[in-house]
Image 1 (cartoon, rainbow, N blue to C red):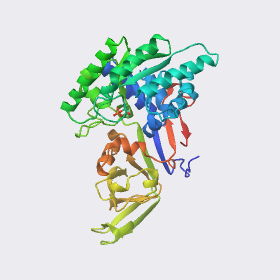
Image 2 (cartoon, rainbow, N blue to C red):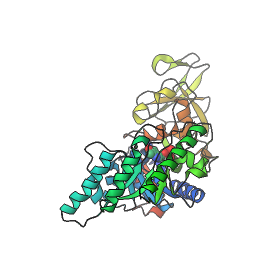
Image 3 (tube, rainbow, N blue to C red):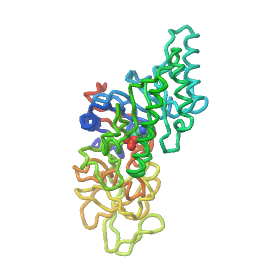
Image 4 (cartoon, protein in one colour):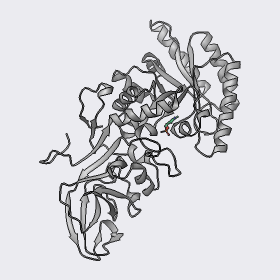
Length: 400
Ligand SMILES: *Cc1c(COP(=O)(O)O)cnc(C)c1O
């Protein structure tokens, strides 16, 4: 339950527009065809709600889902989503047998993980189930130096995988990698390493159907990076992957999350008055200040204080005045009329005049990804749209 005032509008909320998400996926799917879309819904769909986002993405033409870990994959399965799901980040004790039983595809970053996947298939067969292979995507490290099999170990891993495939214990559904988003030169070197890895896999007797390396940024920029599928995260949430100032609007994408609240207090201050902690801001002239009940506990970055962050209030973008605190911050509205209860939009669709999460990211010295992903549990999510994704109701409110 969110706290609502007499007009029924919540004190604070994140509105998730599932139709916008479906539309973004549709736009991207058309641009990427014939490559499939793997909709990346890790980290609770970047703060948007994994299950609702997954359904909306599938409605827009995504054919597969991607998450980081197995808990995230099981959440989708437990909600009844039966599309292919790939999880690629595993601890040493991750329960592969449970994952294989749930039909989750495993991203494999080492020979040890590959052997554990095969053991999971053996264990399930021993448990009386039909002998079904563990479906895996082998990950090659092409230069990100995070996970993925190092190139020096790749020949061994594909040889072992081919043997396990012949034994019916694993099925190599895919081979994948991930870009470092560094420069075109590094991207091409990574693509070349990926090509070598694919050639080695073929030579070992593997024929993966789904080769994938691109996330939103390369998928949009370089058709040669698309292969059989692209892993789209940020683009489907309507934010830009680019650090060069290219906006989501220029990419034809609509931000899915709107963060809003209602003015909690209004006061008039004299010229020279300080506001919020440490008085890093002083009124240059008499001015009206509006208090917004969202703070860094809710994911509004304190680093954005004094760095040009703005929010939409009373028809205009207003600058943040002073420090963003844990629960609240102040907007300077000058001589304009504002009242307690007026709607404030921190970020949303720029077509409405609101700033974007990408702009908040810039003000905080970070990226839009981090802004939406960190919206905290005190902010209720309200879903709108999503009829195409067979939502039970057109408006559902959940607390994450
Ligand atoms: C998060 C992630 C993605 C999605 O990246 P975007 O830039 O959000 O499109 C794709 N692949 C992997 C391996 C990821 O971790």
